[in-house]
Length: 485
Image (cartoon, rainbow, N blue to C red; front, side, top):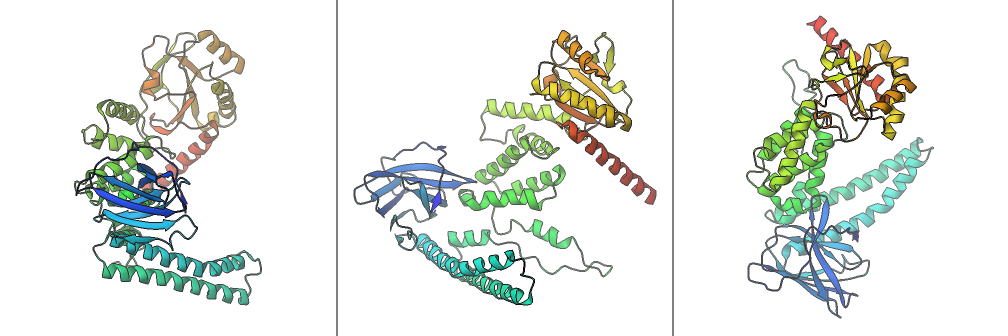
């Protein structure tokens, strides 16, 4: 059985009445009595409780509602929170019976739902095939772990075991293909199709007679969604859709904002007006790239907000939340990689003005800090060490900005740590620095090039030298390309 962790997105309630257009699902689980059983569904990568029912002394219970359920894979969850699944599609008035033993799949009996009869027939078949293949997999694993497995005898044994496993896998595929042919319109057929990978044809030849090396990748990417109609929101209520969505954007699409934005827009267009899949794809991209793990990917968040939230297409968020999301995107947009840093004129400890844009340097390390910040007290001296030992020699300057009003502490810290760079603060409060440079904690470090374009942001001191190395290599490559041209 599988383990479920409850997320109560839906309120738990028993619907008091039922009409012909609703659903009635009667269950009996031998071994349960005088308790409650939950009814939920998959949604994205989570599971949610939708209803609850009392279990009588003989293990009987009923889930019912006045409206039909949207299609998907639903969950029956006993008090142990170990659940089993049922398919919900057109047939929504049926019953099932099983027990609490470990053989609940084998003991499952369904009445009134051909989808679920076939689903559990397949589950039983898969269970049998798994047990058939398990000893072969274990033996193969032992051989691969054996340091002497290079011998011909071991290799022959491994090949034989792998063939047996492959034969069993083929039996499973044959079962699915046979079912899809016999029941082309069933929900289970749609699920089987959705799990299929694109079948990449033979690579064509280019005019020069060589194979097009990029063809397999392009074909795979362009046909990745062929088996999941994005206008069908039933797949949102299965574990399939979210996993494919994540894999597509993490592993299939080239990892840069332009590529992800392009493929995201194509995907949204394929929803063909289905509000649920439209919403889920946009929500996924917005949430994933609002605070990305890869620098620069926040450009995807900005793109989604400009395209869908500012234009009031994000119908699922209220006006207050929408404005907050828009506000964040408008803050981030001027700070995207490749953008010129917002211009600022700061004052040093002697009230002399320093304009960021008037400073001539190959690289500018722009750091916002606070002398009262415990983390800053560790990072700033570390930056001082890196500046003296490496960064200064590589043509970098440091433009340090104190964002608080602790003048005495600031000056004392500068003197004690011998901060021999440009130390400034906004004496006349001309700027909202936290808003202008998206500073919600300190310190914050930006790396700018000679044109004051942002090349890296929110990085650690230890990363600065490596980023400069990368930028230098990129410049060398550009020179070589220009020479060839």
